Length: 315
Ligand code: AKB
Image (cartoon, rainbow, N blue to C red; front, side, top):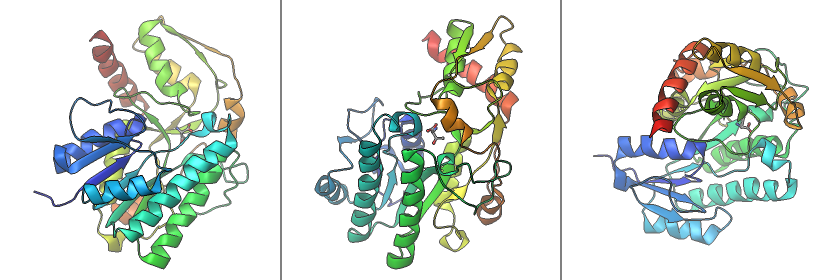
């Protein structure tokens, strides 16, 4: 039985709901405390209402549950973030500063912080984006995440806080719904294909973006957090790759399973956000340091999404 006591912030989000279950399977239900602004979406396990802007509430939660590790998932994503840049900055940055400070004060042994492909910008090489390059993000979400990476690195160097991070691509899941992101189309398209046999995409047909299946995303997170500290050489955030595709390519793959499926295109403000991101990523540093290997490709992702989503929607 592990002695770890885990706190998840923003547990009701797309990644949070699935990660909470994965961590509970690993560490036991009672050792993983999920928190969010709202009641839990899961049917079992300890859950508390917590706002990441409430530093003393966070401190009290860490003490009450004798927390040893924190997964800080609470953030406003790229598309929603543009509706209210100042509030996005506040939630994403003040939230992180509270978590970093409390982690040092309360001697947290490990902290996970998700970064994103949204840190890349027009000056970043679009193909095979390297671990280190020019990162001038086009969204407030991206700005907050690149600043967050640097704060994590600072806290590692100054306070020896063991904070680990991944630059997540767009995450595709049947288990949970995304909210407020630019890559959300790649989940919506599966729901629409099964329910209406058609989908109107808010990105242009040839917009290539890096994506990852939720199972690979969760496995990457757990493997990074399990890796011996001496193997972790990146204390900002690791590039993480799995696959890249365009709306036209994913539609063609869905059509192999649902021949009647039709896609149409009506690009909106999210097109400019997507156009500022990379098309493919070089994750050789993650592969070298902690042996990262993705399992899903576009064909297996499409098959898995349609299979599991169909079962879920029929219930
Ligand atoms: C978004 O689209 O904003 C997120 C992300 C790539 O971080 N899915």
